[in-house]
Length: 453
Image 1: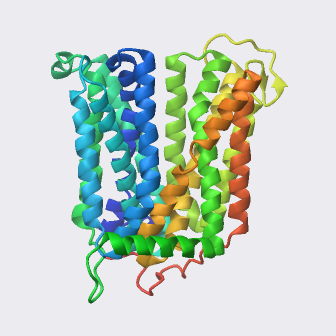
Image 2 (image 1 turned 180 degrees about the vertical axis):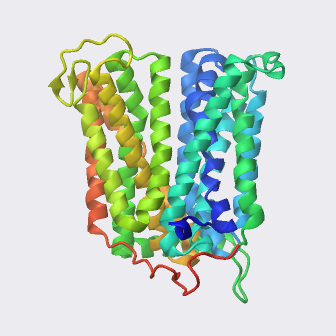
Image 3 (image 1 turned 45 degrees about the vertical axis):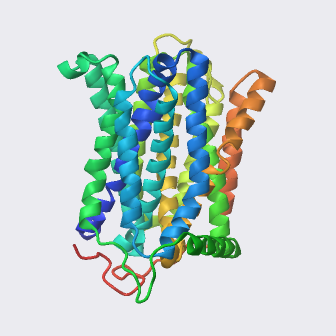
C-alpha cells in the first residue's frame, strides 16, 4: 500500500489539477453567483433566468463544438502546455472579472464572462486530462483519477466553507462593497486556478515533438479530427465506451439537476436543509473519489465503472421509491415535522449519499478508461470526444423530464428517465473489453510504473 500511494512530483501535481476547476462550478454555476446573477443583478427574475440560461446553454454548445476540434489541433503539433496555459489564463480572467459585477450595470457583459469561464474551465479540464497517460503508468491511472476527483471535491467544500464564513462574518473590505460576498465568488474561483494548476504547469514536462514534427495547425487538426472520428467509431470498444458515457452522463445530469428540486417539493426542505443535503453529497463524493483510486487496482477500471453505475441506478430507484410518507415504497407511519427528522427524509439523504459515491466511482473510472483506450499520440483529440459526448446530448434528459412533468403534474416520473439512461450506460460498459493493464511495476512502454520526479 505504501508503494502504491507514493506519488512522484508529476503525479502529485496532476492529481490537484481537477481541484482548479471545481471551485468555479460550486461558486459560480451552482450555489453563490448564479442566484446573485438571477435575483439581484437582473432587472427581473425572468430576465435573469433568461440571460443565465443563455450563458450556460451557449457554454455547453461551445464546449461540444470546440473540445474535439481544439484537441485535434493540439495533437497535430506536440506540446500541450501552451494550450492548457492559454485556457487557464482565460478562465482566470473571466472568473476574476466577476468581482466587478455590481448591481446597476449591464447584465450581458457579465453573462459573457460567465460564458467564457464555462468554456475555458471545461477546456482546462480536457487538456489536463490529456496529461494523465504522460505522468503515470497505465496501472496507476485509476489511482490518480480517483485522487484527482477526491481533491476536487475537498476544494469544493473548502471554498463553500470560506463563503459561508465570509457571509456571516465579512471582513471590512467585503462589508464595504455592495454584495461583496456574492461577488467574491469569481475571484475565489480564479485563485483556485492559480493555487491548484500552477504547480503542475511548473513541475511536469510537456509532450516533446518528434523529429521533423511541425507546429500545430488548423488544417492538420481538421484532418486529424476526421481520422479520429472514423477510428473511434470503427473501434468496437471505444464506440461502446463513448455510447455508455453519453447515456451515463445524461442520467447523472438528470439526477443532480433535479434531485434537490424533488427533495424540496416532496419534503418542503428549506435552504438550510438543502445545504445539509448538498454538503452530504459533496462529502460522499470526495470519499468516493479517494476510495475509487484504491479500488481501481483491486477491481479493475471496468468493474469500478460498472459498480459506480450500479450504485447510481440503485440510488435513483430508491429516490423514486421514497416520498413524504414512504421509505423505499414502505409506509413509515411517521409524519413530516422537524426537517430531516423522519425516516423517509433520512432515507432520501442516504440515497443521495449512494448516488454521490456511485458518481465518484463512475467519473473517476471513465477518465482512466479513456486514458487507457485512447492512442497516446491522439490523447487530446480523444479527450475532446470524451468532453463532446458528455455535453452533446445533455439537453435530452432535462427535456424529457420536463415533458413528463408537464403531462403527469409531478417531477417524480421524470426522474425515472435517469434510471433508463444509467441502465443503458451500464449495458454498453458491460459489453466492452477493458484495456489490459500492464504487469504491475511496468508501464506500457516497459519503464518503471512510477515516473521519476
